[in-house]
Length: 221
Length: 221
DNA sequence: ATTTTTTTTTAGCTTCGTCTAAATTTTAAA
DNA sequence: TTTAAAATTTAGACGAAGCTAAAAAAAAAT
Image (cartoon, rainbow over the protein chains, first blue to last red):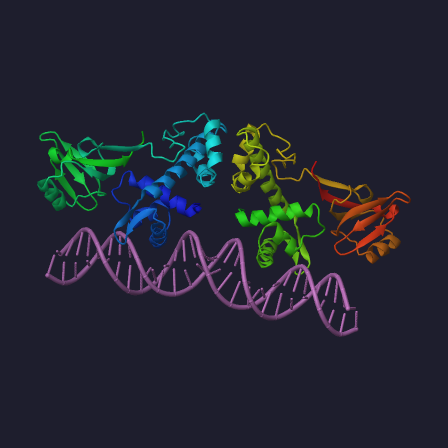
């Protein structure tokens, strides 16, 4: 499957925004892409139809695994070209971004893999950002209990252990389920309770609960 | 000025066809670009409006100096990337063309000049075709008398020496003037006369006449 | 619990590059 | 030289990706 430059740019930007925002919203994305909200809505419908993201009107969107895979491959291309421009053509780290924005849309897996090899399979681009692996797999997908999440890092609930009726009741009341996106905002050392930011609200959870909620998130390691 | 990928492809292809055809025609170009004649006509109107080519409805087209300059810069980019792909990424000469078709449309003069430098300012691409110079100037534009033209090489009449009335009368009768495109098809050794192919017709000229007609053409040296 | 403000979506229009089908012009043939 | 065939252009349409302005929904404020 091949995607247009535009589609790739949307996916890439959503991925980037997802790292620090619970759910990406129309205005936020329009802003990041320097386009208008109406254009974003149009594209969201298209990408949703292609099952590259979850889109509920008025709610926001987040990438599906398929969408994430594409976003990562665009980012891989971008960062490898940046590395090439800086390392081989001696451009400054501040000059490479614009050129890489164009080069990243050349879809030719073999080309990118050969480039990777030629460059010595670098792990980081000139800005220090990690370069995703060749296989398109998310080497950077982390899974930890909510209690161990780094602060301000957004992720999605992927598993709940100890499924007692009492706990499920509590989760239902707090509106937490598989797929819910959230981030830990604060750790209170007094009782190890956590302040959790969700799309609209901020809630507090006990450590006991947090230990049983597992989160998937993409990190830069 | 920046041109779209489409515009660049049309210009590049016209340039290529001009090397071996008197005047590029709609069907021929549609064929080369794998598009339809109607699409070609549309684009010709646009490029004509931008003064990148001469276009007379139903007659065909040829590049203006401005159009030639752009075509050459696209070809420069194409061939430098081909060289890079073959020399640095170890692709076979038969694999590089498709990738270069995409890379060639990245318009960033500094990038291309740095690439050129990085590659050691190569003169020929992996197919043996010459790489146009950085300044966009036509290093490859040759000027010779018609009598000395290589066979089957098309070019345009650019000068006529010895402008006697008799000679001008003859030229007028043969419908040859400044800008006329033609190629030498045969040399008859018996009397050094030449068989000349023009757009519709084939004529014969004496050596005396051919010595006084000068031609500009783009060659691969 | 309304009302106001903000956000998001819809509707309709624009440009670019393409297409098909019909009309026109040029070239070739009878 | 009139007719038939081929090449070219015009007319009208479409899909992508964008825009503006108006409508609708959600969130915030009174």
